[in-house]
Length: 195
Image 1 (cartoon, rainbow, N blue to C red):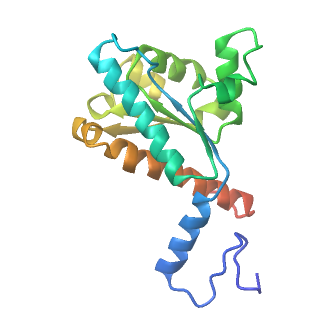
Image 2 (image 1 turned 90 degrees about the horizontal axis):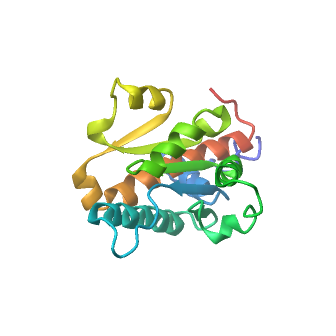
Image 3 (image 1 turned 90 degrees about the vertical axis):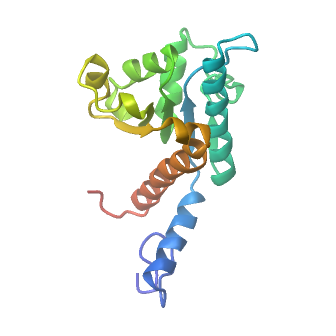
């Protein structure tokens, strides 16, 4: 550390706090992450309008993340980029479990039956549960019923209809979530203590 770095490989000599934070955030975005974006599947051109809208938003989230995290793989579990390595397994749930196991972060746009099943099923695995970031319409966050019990202990981020429409869910919230994961990974790989 006497060379001006702090263990992260960042040179903080003669830098104010703002410059140090900017450098740390830039370095974190260069981390090689595997990010999954779970959510509604493609409903096709004749699907319900609401499901088409959700499917398109899931694509927006993936595309914004790919643009911001150029060194990372950002994929849907059903993409050939992942399935080419797991298609031979005996069940789709097993394939998704393998994808979740290798991921650093899993964003779930929890607005469809399939996404509900993914959260319900995979949140029972502690190593997967800590990677889940559940994006949920704000009106459902903090419920006390069965859904609230399933989501208890997970990282749940609410979004408003306005955030959904204006795309800040994809361009702002999702990006900041993955950036936080990238910073954590940078800190852990640098040997800094976890709290």
